[in-house]
Image (cartoon, rainbow, N blue to C red; front, side, top):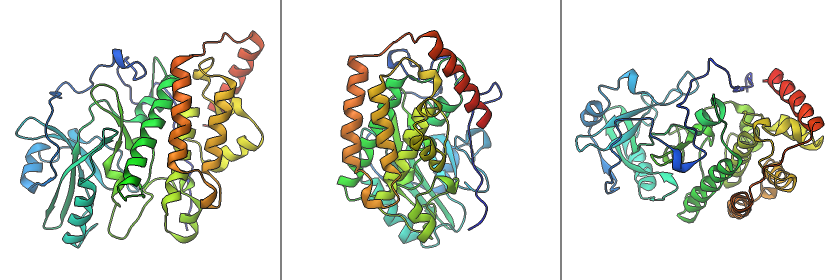
Length: 349
């Protein structure tokens, strides 16, 4: 199937920086995009013309690109502004990704019917000649990847990490209840923050990247085993991807599931957990979340927990973190051990 390269994010001074306000305290969040007017508009799905979206994005200017894009992620997301002042996100598919315009419009309309407070909802599409574009609500406060992997002054707190996981589970459960049980390529770039710092799941992941059904545009080391074996995904595949998201939130790094499973088996929890979270959670909560994440990686899909179970577990953990915050000053010997483990983790990144 080809060579698999392991991808790792690490914090460094060369990483893209964010403003000093980190989204872990909603009262202190400030917007990163000064042009966002914060207005409220009816979310009615509609078809846009290519010219409308060209004007909205300043001719699909490179300065308006807000997505990761490379050879393995050819589809590009732009920020834009409509004539009525509304800020939007525009996903432009690679040419000929969807040769059948009716298939594209039908899939877009199905996603466009969804309306959830936990999602950046789809508000329109464009099908013009060979061009295929999706239009969604714009989230001005960046992606989870930026806040989790590239912080400079303050890391995201434990309580906020649980909140991100819980809101994502709620969004996925909503989609399941509406008859859409597949989410393609769930990763930290698919979760964004609105103008008040609330995490939202991108609607773009509810549609395939092309009519051929390529699901995983990122590293195959993070794909579920059934996709690697058969090239297909099922509802339980989303649970596997959710497990990788939990790993990201716990560790502050993008750890391949196979490596994480080795840490689970060896109970190397200090290596797994982000040392920046020291003192913010109880050993009981940490162990429970690690156990839940490990279940998401079961080889047999039917043995993985349901999204409903994940939501219930995360809701309980998030309430405990909010009501009874842990702020334990660890003994010097433990802090020295954590420092050593932190150096080991950085050397592996």
